[in-house]
Length: 276
Picture (cartoon, rainbow, N blue to C red):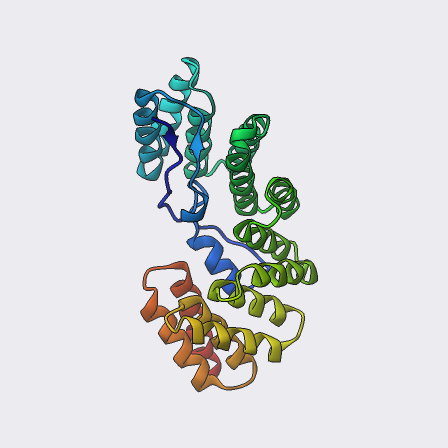
């Protein structure tokens, strides 16, 4: 039985300047310690005990990262290999030690990339490293990690989107738009891509294109909280406070207790202050 890379559930939170709100909310809703549903791959191990050990270690990263780190270290001392290193990297994220986590994730990815059967997994671990570099506030390293991932799988839509996020973090909006255009070509009916592209268009002072994208996104997915957040920002910038308020309230209702709701609530409070 192979060791399966599990889907992480943690939400990492951090402060970032100069980020588009929808982009930020989407990033913080992601789980950099685990693979997305589209990215689940297998470590090339055959021992059922190792599979159980990996699953137990990754479970610890959710609420007990120090225990997970210690457990992974003990496992590494017994030749735990890439699964143990991946768990340790995930634990480091939970401990807020982002630089170490990203470097270790890239080390594991580099090791796996040497074997043809593990190259796809390596690409997704490079992608995870990129997300962690963003949490560290180092978009240049994030872009480099994303480039490494896309060298292995050039047309993976999720990897393209994640590089666009990294480019946005570096305020390279036109480059981000190039990636988002490519991602939209690969998956033309994904609302999340359209919301991100709307945010990027807003940052290059193209509000009409931004509004067109976000309206299309909400047609595809009326319950997309990030879409309502972004449209509210666009409506507020256009002076339509009533419409902005409605969208932000909808974002909060659709995704309560989320980073998206936090951003929407902060926008509402600023709107109320300006109105008084």
